[in-house]
Image 1 (cartoon, each protein chain N blue to C red):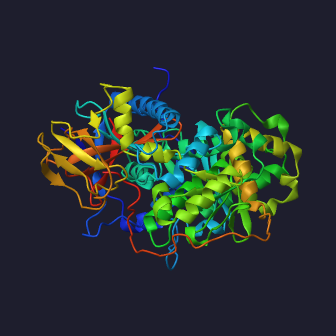
Image 2: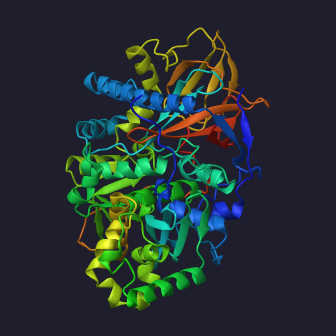
Image 3: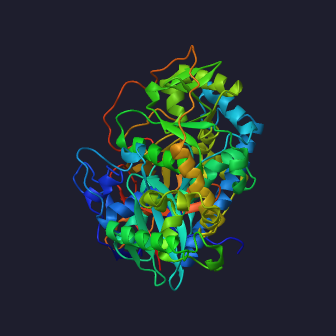
Length: 205
Length: 391
């Protein structure tokens, strides 16, 4: 049989909406007032949703990341269990890593320390999009460091995870180009509004 | 006998938070069952193979219709024939996604094609997201599902740019073309299904926006605009035949826009050919006796059979007839004026309680995800969605 069915195994397979679902399921999301859902929130993306995989004992890689309303990091351990890192845990890990950077003991800035495999957990977080947000106070000593930029690329589980990430964040940042012009267009088609809640378009019988 | 696994249901609050607001039917019962159909690995594989084979057969049948000018025979409205032909000519009119409705495939019953929802299929949210979340929330192995719908459709959006080429080349060739997504106002299921598709295109790397269809501006010479911005692609979760019948001016303008190459409309107009149930008869003509097909004719068959209008939906005007063509059971009379096909009756697999199960199999370049609808012999708007688990 030439092709095997691909089954869901990563968050990429349910994409950025799966990320929203994961957070909602974990109960971490603060309840917004009013009619807020995965689609109404989509406009303001200040944070990042990051999934980090443990690839070997205490070795980590970034599996997925997407722009999100608030910053969350999910850790998938070797035994398959998952854990959402709290703000306190993230801050502590980043602070620890900052100290290592200052002392030249971080693989992020010191090429001699980078092994072929994964990164430490603090390093992986700082290499991710979440790191740029949580660790912004570390500032230039990290983000302008050429070795950091190189390590960052290598810290993703696959090249496609990296390019997907770069792509989605660039797009979130980019301001809209406007090509306004005069038109002789028509609008208002299907303007008579109904009140059906379920679709009558989709299903055959 | 269909075997089921009991699950803890997802809460209405959770479903609301992910935008799935149509979780409760009008009789106040949950739309998503708190059970999953147990499917074997081999059964899932067979569904996958069936979807791929059926799609190839539809493409062949489409070619047959275009070559022999059978548009009238399969019920294509005259004001869409040009745009159907035009879209068929060029691969840039890429078919994003569709859903096969099948009987069988489980508990030993052979897979048979009931119909093909090729233009505006729903049940997408349920299949791609909700059934995944069900496994996740029940601490079950989320990989134990034939479901890569999200990824497959995301990748198929990339193919608008790379066509049959390498998906990795998307960024190399993408020049900032924008996709506008539209649904009709006031229908939350259509709206959020459309927004889910928008998210997939977003994740693919496209610039996208959403606008209700009545807010979109159409110009024969200039293209498709929303808030002064031009869009190269317009995805509409509005059936082509509704455009033809209810807004014939729009059908005319879209034909011009496509002729003038000012925009590409998705799903492409040729998917209306696939959508027509008359294609089931064309398929039987081209592949008589094919194991995935049921005997289908424009005339009553002389066996127990199902009469279906060419463009019926949600079981509307579907009738089960006996061998003398007398009505045994019928769905709501919604499309009585449409021409019909007669399809050999096939028993849907049942569970212990006697409920019938119909498989919905999504296709986006290849078979990509399975879900079930559960109800009576004619599945209508009150039927339930049932997840599956591979065991």
